[in-house]
Length: 388
Ligand SMILES: Nc1ncnc2c1ncn2[C@@H]1O[C@H](COP(=O)(O)OP(=O)(O)O)[C@@H](O)[C@H]1O
Ligand SMILES: [Mg+2]
Image (cartoon, rainbow, N blue to C red; front, side, top):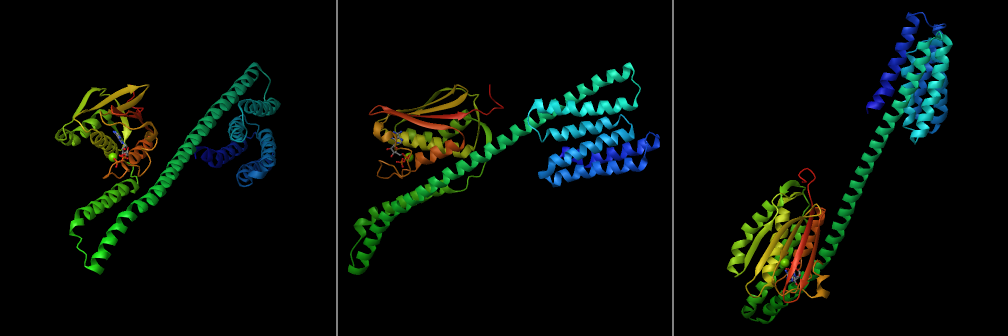
């Protein structure tokens, strides 16, 4: 934007200024020629943008026009035009060495023309050094800007690619879940439909089956509620929160249920200074899910231990229980949608947890020992601003 302003506005104005100055100071040998050369130069400057394919030819004419223009105006101020032109070409060539070479060539042209109309004294000779050094500085600055720009574009592209990837993954999972959901709902619906038809056609008393029917209906309800929770568009409510605060909220939400089931939450090992960019409610939902699973896995009274640590610059939360554990072969399945070993389960809890954690750039893993308990480990990238 700023560069375009410089090439499309400032450069032509500068050329007009040099023409004006040269005529006013009576440096010019041919006023008409100087104006024509100025127009040719400015025209090339515009045409270059329109006919990018012929850039090399147009820019050659542009350089020649500048050299003649400089020679006719006999003003050292043309140096700025060389420098602006050099900066423009640098955007079209790759590499510092090529840039330095081009700068060297342009400044050599400039110097030769300048010497042709200025007296050769020590000032004039020292000025050559200054001119070359200035061109070198310009090349380095522009290369730096180009490099920064390239890196920025790369990061933007990378982010776009990542977002697209997440979207695709989510859509894939959604499709998988939708198919599973239809399958899960079809069975109870068929059962209920059978009961209703039987009752309608044969006056069959379905009262003894009320509980079963109700159970199936509430299971379908639970399935759809959880599915909707997952499929609703992810409104980004990412803000930086302390994970410790988040876990305290989770504990306050779940503790009464845990205690009334005869269990206990142990949360004594924590680092309160770990900040993560997150959708607070979603992360609360994840931990509530894990605690519910932990509770459901413990037949006898037991502890649910939560630890919050900083491991290798990541916020790591461990949720462990003393429950029945998970068989090695089943561990791989627990994050799959609809995998459940519970009669009342939906099998959606952990798949939703995994999706949420992945959306936060984190990971979730489980380890388990049969009859001893299960431990879930969640890693979050730390928020860079608060990183210690
Ligand atoms: N803490 C745990 N201890 C033992 N098994 C677990 C635990 N958490 C999850 N599981 C297993 O993973 C399955 C899937 O869990 P989840 O996705 O939350 O669905 P649901 O709780 O509805 O069954 C559970 O049915 C259970 O077999
Ligand atoms: Mg669950």
